[in-house]
Image (cartoon, rainbow, N blue to C red):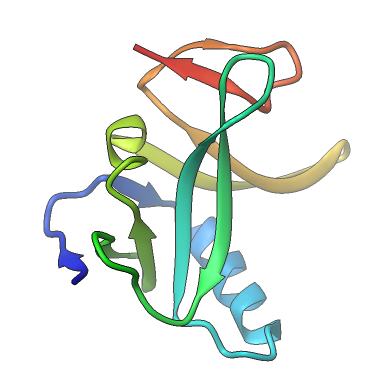
Length: 116
């Protein structure tokens, strides 16, 4: 059973929330949640992942940020506490950026990281 969470684990900027909602509307299967997770990989050991879900899984923490329903699994929660998801648009490209105070080391490409 999923756990409703009142404490903020991850925050989402208004710009990121706007883009998430926009992308959700484009999905054929009408997802209700954005899953944010940490997985093994990359040169620094961990990397972020995001994906749409129709419903929570066993052990998920469910929260709502800026009108977006988020899911975080029990393994990822310790790596994501205090993280902020933003959406950046620049001449070099656009995309989601996770600002995470738990990161102690990241790789030069900026796609993987390590926490304490």
